[in-house]
Image 1: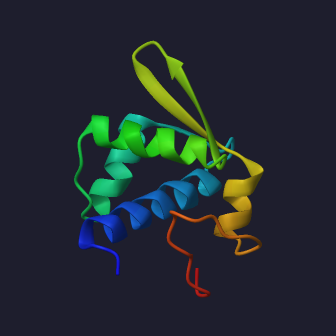
Image 2: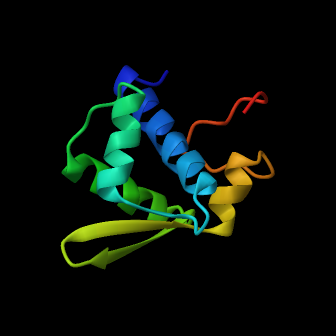
Length: 99
């Protein structure tokens, strides 16, 4: 059974992917991601967000680049497929059918 923190983490990863899907260029910086997560009552530090972005990059669903001191996430095809329910990636909550 997953802990509460594990569930929140997996939900946050899904929220990040869904928000990236909504961007015209599929990119968001960590500050924008932090605001989105705050809106979903997932208030975490930038270090925590960077950890999640690194994990999403390991899972090959995003690409992360550094522009100055800011990390920028770019959606990859596998991330879009997860959000669209075409394929699922372990470690990320599954989107509901209503999404």
